Image (cartoon, rainbow, N blue to C red; front, side, top):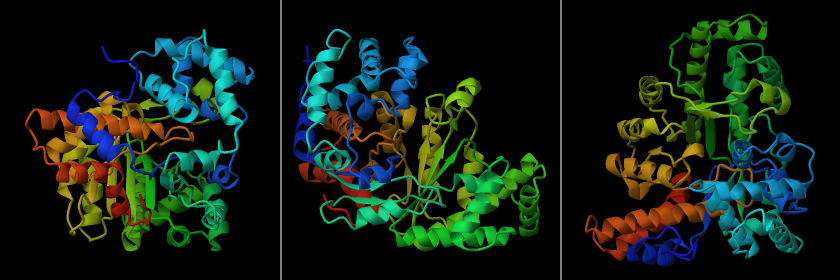
Length: 470
């Protein structure tokens, strides 16, 4: 029997142990998609206790606690931080098979040097031990980043953001990690949102241009792409619950945009024409700047209206959508490729039924001498568990070129989530080690080192063209 989460955790063959220890364990991290607040990095945020570092804003843990019968006052309510921590400790033993169980103990081991198994009975002991570590000088936002060997971070930012903290971080003399913005124009596409007109007005203000027409709207977006580029942005991101594609003429789009600004009703087909046209415009901007475009597909958000009204977004009430995506995604990518304006693109799916859809779709649009130009992105959100990661990588290896894969990202709001990279790397090494031991791939350490280090760090560094050093 293997010991609980020992040094060979998730490594079930000798080759896996060798690959992890020699090639993966010491690699740096390039976290190219996350939701950290750059203000916290600039201010070098200190944490009062482990609950603040661990449970504030972590909707993964919140969902699990709710499922264990924990009431909302112990999750997002006004209970004390210790009471919230104790409620999480009580939940832990029931999370058998859940990645949260592994992540939680990896974080306790790596950041707090705590190897006890968290449960209700030792909650106070672990609370005290962890808080002793938190009281130390190095335990801060930047301290955690440096301890985790994170060399690059790409945050998620609205086009109207001023990026003031990214600029300040870039001027720090004692912090080497690059913290760069990511252009996330979701609000630019949501023409039927009651906040769309307000957002357009904000875009007008920050771009310094009056926006009354669609071409002025596009000019406003172009000016923000330019601004983001100057601050170091090289990646865009779109969250699409459904993949749309409906062609429309420029005059039609002008009229649809005017309707929205005049608070007139926009039909569904008009909305899809607007989104399609605008995505093509944005894709061309990204291509011109040699940016990468990320498409996160298939989230069904804010399902619980009662909790949405009480708590807002991103609090643990999202799930997987099951809409068909293949045909419209093909049309969208093809429309950009046809005019030589398809940027490097990463396709993520929240629904594992679409693993083979994205794995084969990526192969349709490769080229331009760029290794892995169109990427099937890492197992995302509800899939970032052992089974999900293995399924995504096996689909990619069956259908494409796993050796050019960009590897893991945290997609997290927590500074302690970098252990997810270790979790991923162990699964990667175990999978490849198993193939080698079965004789399905040669025991060629020169090539295996290149593949493992590439997927852990080097591929992403080269793909994004961002100067981060291992």
